[in-house]
Length: 205
Image (cartoon, rainbow, N blue to C red; front, side, top):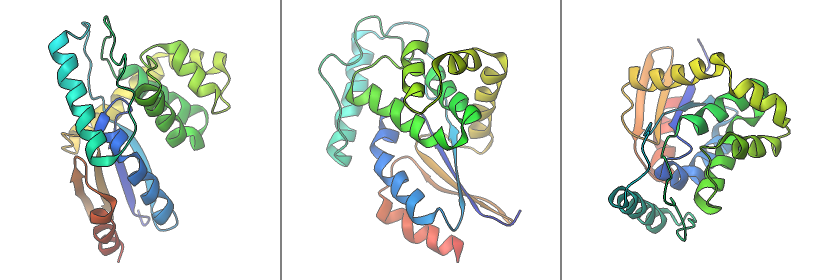
């Protein structure tokens, strides 16, 4: 392998990843000609029961922290309504599906899900909502839903989760640099782009 890779480990329903969204866009723009930049879906939560009030308050507290630190927009009013089950697998699988159907849709689909969840209050655990976001990426609804529901896409999504664990990624967003010599963890959790840029430059040089 000659081309260096920047692996971006993230989850579309991770609030710090939403906070990091402008940073990853900047890095993709600045370094796209010098290394491959690839997205690995993290599998942040796999809850099966609706959020109770204490968990909802705890999560919204994190959202306020992200908003304060990064300036990213959140819709707090009506967020995480009664009965909401915080399972991020469908949203992750939607990105994996979009990527399989149309590679260039990978990052746009990821960002569309983030925006729908955090700024529009949409329930991105629902296939119909995800299909609508895929449609905006020029992926036909029927085609998306058919692929989304296959065992192959479910397994592919689990493979993303396994890769994150195998590389020791314990938090999101995380960046891992890879070259012929191996892997190097750049960050595990949010860091401003100004801190990351010189380390990436040094790695590439």
